[in-house]
Image (cartoon, rainbow, N blue to C red):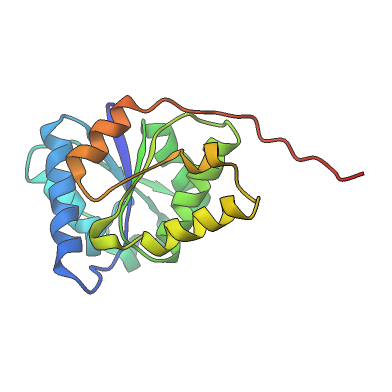
Length: 192
């Protein structure tokens, strides 16, 4: 893996561990010589993960929509900052630049980004590993909901297994390197 996209909050959240783990993730990506692709801001967990990589001589590429340039406050110490026009262009560019995705705690935007990448994988548009860094059980309820989707026949178990989950950064990265897409064609059938 040469580059990983990280989706995370533009806020720090309520627990200090979120910021600490974001910084540590950036640091570990730099140490493994993996480029960080992220949203381009210097605020919240986004800024922390970028700082972790930048301060450890990692390569960091930010992708920021023009309309968020002032609101999210562009990071000034990146190797490259790519300005796009829309949120969709942002996700598309981040997907093009990376070999996998890690999702950290965040809000609606973080979930939307993760689920779009997951949906693209489910549809066979890419075969990249998609991981959740489940800090302090942050995503436990979401993972329970995904299990509920399987239990109620809305999601195949093979697609559920596309999500790599760990609360340990090294374990998460190691599992991403070993990931093999279970790609199964998604067919929608009409009832007679």
